[in-house]
Length: 235
Ligand code: IPE
Ligand code: IPE
Ligand code: MG
Image 1: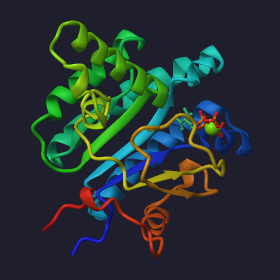
Image 2: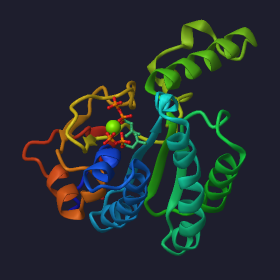
Image 3: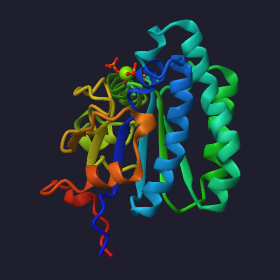
Image 4: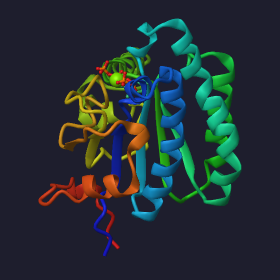
């Protein structure tokens, strides 16, 4: 029987400090974080996790120095171009959660292309949270509902939790069973605010570039970790 949670969400924090403490730049830390991400995707497949959500850029991260923001915008372009053939070979489906409109064209394009190319793959889902903010997610869902009410496509009486859920960036996914944050900080930093209402939280002091399959396995095997039972796949 599969004992892994269905949906694991990871706040990949600590890249900048990893770089600085090794005498490198913060960007070097982000590059190392992207390499760790490749290993964590592999590990998630090996651990039979069905969905892994990876928080890579928050709606607040625009306030970082311009050169760091630029680096973070182009990193997924390199990453997804390199990984697409392997994603196809390994049946990996990619989803993106977050406000895509505000992104530079090459970043938008690589996301569009990757999501489109992998849409019929039915292996693990890698949901990449980029320019994602939990408040923004709820707000944009509310805007869509208001629009629907205005067009008379939605009756006000039918607006309930299930309906809001259908308009979230993560509409295709069940809520995460567990949210893991690396890098030592114990806060949610505007991640999946609606979706984590019943999730387990796990904090690791390890900086994300040093996060490994073994540490992921430990995180998801915390004794007594409650699962969102409705999320479990019956097999
Ligand atoms: C997480 O690492 C990645 C992003 C937020 C883009 P940080 O860049 O926040 O690294 P620290 O927390 O400053 O070490
Ligand atoms: C959270 O980390 C966002 C990501 C990992 C993408 P931050 O480093 O941006 O969060 P704060 O600033 O510590 O709250
Ligand atoms: Mg940080």
